[in-house]
Picture (tube, rainbow, N blue to C red):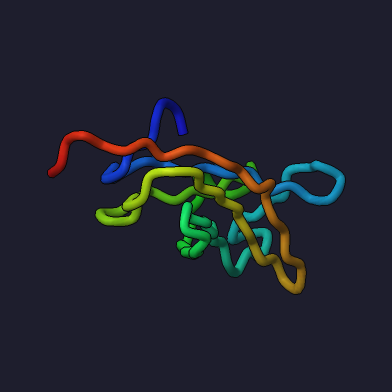
Length: 108
């Protein structure tokens, strides 16, 4: 997530690293038994949206990501996001990341 994020952006990549309680990166690859990977977003109006995530590489680096689709980034203001993966009976989370979405003057 480099640069500013604006209302209406499509294709913006949101990336998170999953770590365990000791701050070690979690291998969340399919080979390690990962069965679910999602990123939950909290919008400025306090509603949430959970999106299926993909791997940045193969998951062994603990990084998951989501690419914004048309209509997803609809509100300007303060947003939050947090990733979650399930490996067997264990569930791991990323840190909660805050970011700002700027209004857009241009429309599609």
